[in-house]
Image (cartoon, rainbow, N blue to C red):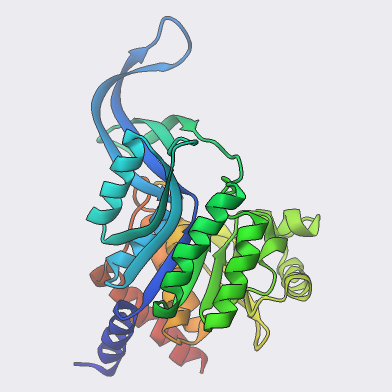
Length: 340
């Protein structure tokens, strides 16, 4: 067995030993597939003849599923409704190996369901035509915050990291985030964040990830050139004080910098993308496993970057099993050796 393979196996084994609690907004992603047969007489739209329907755990359930797919223990703290969709989502989570012990049932709000209408063809990528969301973005009340924190507190002594997956759908309120950060600090637990805006409430996190549009919105200026990114990273670090900051840049890869890490740009792996849904979730899940396993942040980012490139080749949320991630780990190790 080669040294690189030994290291790859060692990293995969380290990932599998981790225990991560994901906190965030969860959805039931519904896909309705049909084949376009003609144009409608009622409107300039295709008529789809129904083929099949599928369901996938979405939102914060997606990084939890990615963590479980790599053999690690994934726990989930979230809120679902007291409805059939909530029961279906919980069943899907259990099938994926995710422990929903910290999921609350709320009779006052529905389970979020995102329904995508997809035109299916054997000659090209499936094409999403429309999406309908059933969602209540009302922030959870103080009673729910207290109940979630009670369950989270019971789990913290046994976890290596907490990943906040924020879809701005009412769960990760400033009050919950503040108390969660305090408890993570008290227990010495790594706190990582996949933010989709509202960056300020995550100041001081162990890892803060956002995309380029969210970074630009926070800074209130455009970010386009490499020099723009260097300055943006410095300004975000100064304002938010995370241990490590990552700004993902889509087809241009990512920028990474930390208190003890100089600025780096990591290019994306060029792939033919079918659907970018869930790429950020996969990246954050594997980045969290890497940091919890005490990998060098640059190595962890390269591995997570490779994994994100894998899931965009598929329609909808997807996970990366160990066999598919192994070549990416080997490649990241080779890149690290070449840079040394």
